[in-house]
Length: 73
Image (cartoon, rainbow, N blue to C red; front, side, top):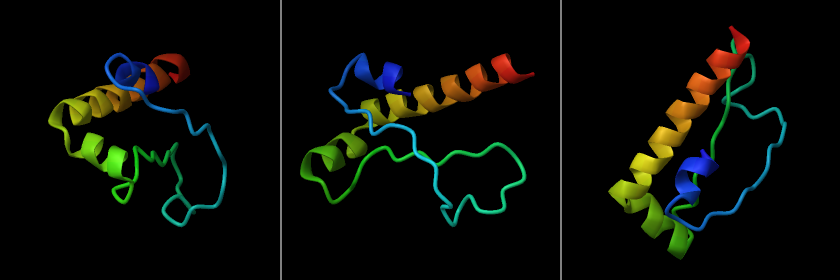
């Protein structure tokens, strides 16, 4: 995801964290929760509203899913 977005935008890596997030508790399959930014943050909200940024995010997520399955099947 970061590789896709960093090609055109300055973004920071918040890292990987583990926690019992309610939306993931009890998931019986591989699952991730991705935070792409905060709509309350002035700069991040502008990026999130940008369709080209959204395309980079979507491509990064799709590529990450593809890579996961390529390595784990």
